Image (tube, helix red, strand yellow):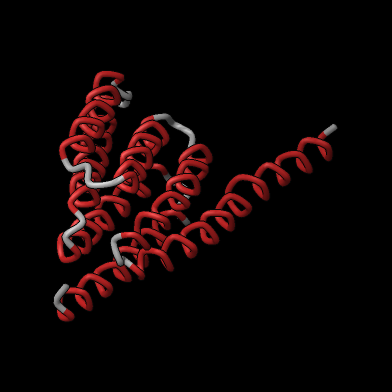
Amino acid sequence: METTFFIIAQVLGICALIIFCSGIQIKEKNDILKRFAISSIFKILQYLFLGAFTGVAMFTIVLAKNLSFYSYEKKTGNRSVAMLIFFVIVSIILGILTYTSIFSVLPIITTTIGTYTLWQRRASVTRAGVIAGAMMLIVYNFYVSAYTGVLGGVVVIVSTIYSIWKNDIKKSEGKEVSQSEAA
């Protein structure tokens, strides 16, 4: 692998990480989707520079999915089961077409989990899916030499755990205190 491409890929991975982590800290689901879409563009380019074509295919699906889910929900206020099924099927088909090793399965699983967790309405479920996906992508990123992706996976997990505490646990504890004071 050419050193220049390798360095560019690592820089793109850092950019993707920063944008992704800023997105996971946001409370509103649609704002999370916007940041995830921008981050996906950087991930696509990173994997392209590394020649990791399953990663390119999966993050292209992630980008299309995020934009589609955002646009459809903004327009209709609803979620489309057909879109969910479509993106899961496309993920599996592209995964089969780009399969090079057992490690190629990890982004396929990650994309499938991410598709469901972004499709449903609860940001807390999205955050849980992010942790599961990040764990699998750490292994894939190591395999394809996306070392900033490995570091990014760890940062994403830590950032998401903090976000769960801040937006889900702490928030629900505050509600419990308010409800017990009202009683």
